[in-house]
Image (cartoon, rainbow, N blue to C red; front, side, top):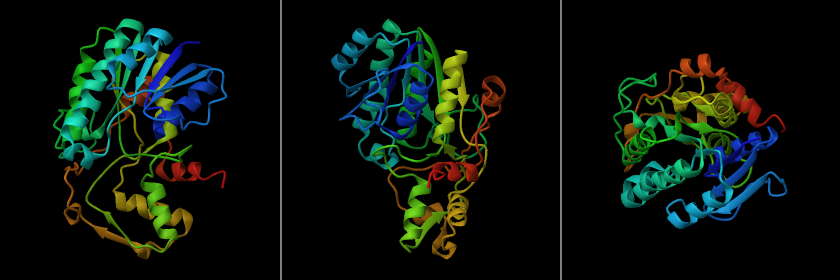
Length: 299
């Protein structure tokens, strides 16, 4: 079985992707900044490196030693406001870091898979297809467009996977997401403001991970939109969480995006047309309600 290198291994997607790859008997090289937070340390098919992707020598050494056949580049600076306030850092990680990983992949690997975002679009249209015009309205989105452009110039087979508002249960130490945030606040009887005028297709993290594995197995190239199938506002998502856990919906305050003053602009209407992934990959995502249930089925 081929060796897969996953950057951003400590993140929510990285943890779930590596979990699935190991179950499918792939050899996995996990690369992330800081100590390993993954619960796979004892797996003989898993190796972890503490590596900052902006460190060119460290990245080179990993590729030189491990010779991964496939690279899934999920590492990124993703906090929209942080990217807006720290533009040089965001560019160093999201653009230059991607170029460094890709350059080494071209020398040692056969397939480079880049994880991108719905924030490459301006949010004027919604229901975006793969060939729709890119027009980011935040620095974060702009850096992701730059990284996509670098990927498209690659000298090896490449795939760009755009996804949207990823949620799911954390395996170890990852940030909260909309489901856990709503659940925790409502359980604590805390009132929360949730926007009604943004639209997304929220993505269950295990579905996204399975979509990546389908791309690896089918050696699919080009651009794919891999997200959930339900078109929802964050307020509708919060209502679904409250309903599933039988929590007080009256604690949810509907507001519009103008309520919040944030450095980084968010596109209002994104969400994806996933027909290409469904027809060409056999991708079948869960509904949002099914995703919530899957997160907490062990409970």
